[in-house]
Image (cartoon, rainbow, N blue to C red; front, side):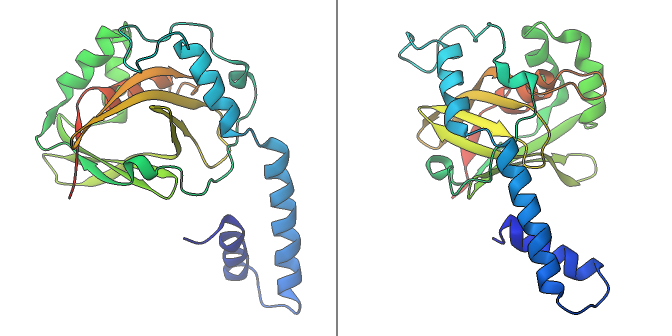
Length: 227
């Protein structure tokens, strides 16, 4: 997989007119971008520590009956850019899918149980399908969640994140500089994977809180490993 620096260089060479010493120009741009990433970097170790503290260190089992309902950490107050990690998804690496079609009404029920029912219509606007299948792919530190519409057969990635797994917790973050992280508890039994929402500092999108889609997409149904 090409590094961020390699992708920047390729983009510059594609878009810039030919000129002498273009490699020096590319190196300068790459160095500047690397410095900006370094200034904004928040290590995932710190985020994971905050997640443990908020979810309740005293609870030994990762599937406590109650979600963490405390004030979000200071990370919400500033821009979070988590550096592109080396592979941090080994425990779940590969593809996971939902075998049967999922009605949107099940996603809506998940949201209502969390007390977020006023945003169900907004969620349907983000996920305009009455029946769907969901597929997860963990690959080299990234997670892609794909939705397939039963009516059209069209598949699209509805969530693309950096992912960090550890201590039965998963931390998701954007890789493009957008603020906000989301934390889940996860559990595998045999070939079945389930998530439980912990907390998020993801901002609202079109007036819909980030917790709405994150709860609906990841915690409504179980996922099964694709062999």
